[in-house]
Image (cartoon, rainbow, N blue to C red; front, side):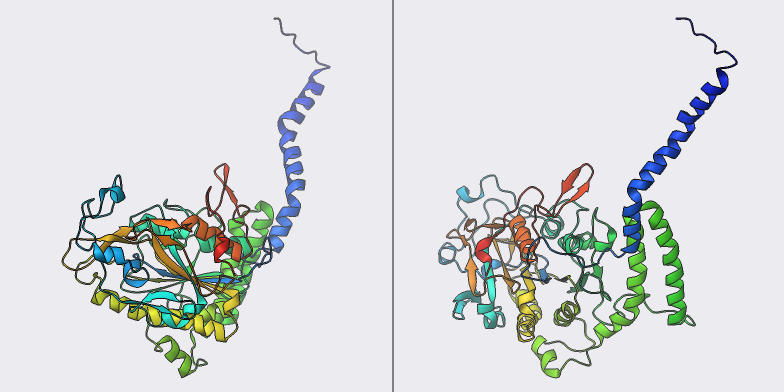
Length: 481
């Protein structure tokens, strides 16, 4: 096909038209896109704080959560679940019908069944069954809801902690606290919306991803606070920087950030602005949080807390002070409940020790919130990433392996049914049989108590909508008040 060369008279018109489509299309596209996004960018600039409180999907029963995470896997057989048949079969090899095609972290399929040396009794008007290991918990038996048929999917510590905290065994998913602050924001202006406190001999396996924000904006990740000394390192100004100097610096930096936010609408810039502002406000609010001079000796004795000494007891008291100040989600990690049977990790003295560290403070937290009128608005969750096997583990001393088929957790306040017990296991406590609550169900129910529909709380990432409960989860209505 022959191409005709344009005449001299046509050239300017064609050149002008070619220039219009080749060059001005970018300008036209930018103008159109700018007009579409202008309102969003302006709104983002004006509402730069990602933790601004937002309405729930429906009327909530709870406003905040305190998750007492017993890292390592507390043994339900020593604490909550007496099994006469297991006592009778103590020392016998477990029937193959129970363990066929099952995997364990350490034991083999021919491990022998193991009874317990602990004594149990019923407590309160509700008749909650609790062992002698937890004498303080027995005093709040009528305030708690026991979930005796919990179930999870993962039997190794790191992935199992991720699963309990993020709904996935995979590294890098948003934690439950991050999802909740993403959905609701925070009622606290001067403290983070999600705070993490740690106690015990070491940190939890898996570390910071247990309270991370994953693919959500980083504003929603948990902020670890130290229970003594400066709550956050490097929060105080170096000499001779005054608070006024710091305020002017923060204002100047954030003004540049807001200009950039208006141009791009990038949510991470909003996070950066909020982080500067929060850090500045925390220079005053964090020391006030840690100042226990206003707490009475009676309150300190209730928790078993000693001023200046880091402990789970001190963290429970700080958790109460945090929710009083509007913090949405507080998580306390205490290690180490991993009682395999070696010296220091057995079900004798080591279990007594860790129960002694946590039992009184956990019960005190429920009592303290209740007497202050805060328990109805605060949901307390107690438990670990899994339970322990009915089989013993052949080590130096008495211990049990990791168990995912059944374990026990308890909750209090925040709209759960007090003095209730939900779920049953088989005669040796191996399988959860009735009213089974999977981890996804627990997550769905916690969100429900906060007024959030777990099916609607989503975030689009890599082409699909993710949620805390993944593609599962049902609200457990039987545990609701």
